[in-house]
Image (cartoon, rainbow, N blue to C red; front, side, top):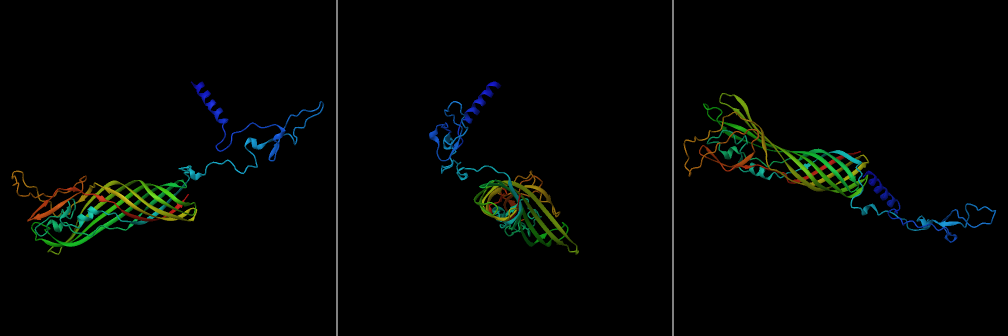
Length: 385
């Protein structure tokens, strides 16, 4: 078997060795006749009849053959060449040009669902520490679910790397972090102790979102002057986004005995999802090793599920206990649905809420998701190696 393998590849090598190169005419047999002498010829040895006793010089002006017969004529106006590089769909890989840099910019994710909940007092996040404060007739769910402005953030920062495949394409890798926040203040009525009258205390509510995104993309250079400037399209191949949601409730309590203290309750949650982005950008070189540029992209993605990671109770009191099973309810009378304290691993949900008398009623909970759609504008500085 090994002998047959050697014979086979030897035959292939022999066949290929007799084939002309791409763009070259096949070799023809050289003409050793004296009629082949012409302009652009070279002298060769020609055995001509000679008289007996004389020697024949190895070269003579009449003993020549045409170099054009071998495909190497110097008088031809056309030279065999390969097709231009632009005719290939992909240029040869280079893999040698890479760069890293810092980026800063502006990102505005929509966060439509979360902003809608925070702006509607009849909707509430079940694990929100503001909703979990002990209720009373003067502190119903519509007041516990404090109304806040839309979450908004500007600064985005991160790092970016680029690996050039060829003058037309390059891979990009980027990591960026964005933070947004919404805050509101009001005054609430709380029973600090069961044997004390209620106190009206100021409350500070905060909703903070951090979004970390990792991007892997393809960059198509529709204009590229190496070492000077380039313009390109960004095509997102894969994006992974991680989100962290923090909900705070701070009450500054002042009792009738002139004692004061702060009560803080916090719920922290996190989740991740996939995303992508598309856009365009440009880059300008100051030096071969230094450039600046900008990107304008539109991000598309969603984080469908958030899980509780930590919860800190306010310490004011526990939620009302569930009604005993020994008292079956009247089907025509709604049953209060007491809230339960969140534990790590619980899914963040929201639901419509209302208070009738001293009882809270809650609709069907649904998962809270974060919408990441929005424009992303970044500026970067790159160091080339």
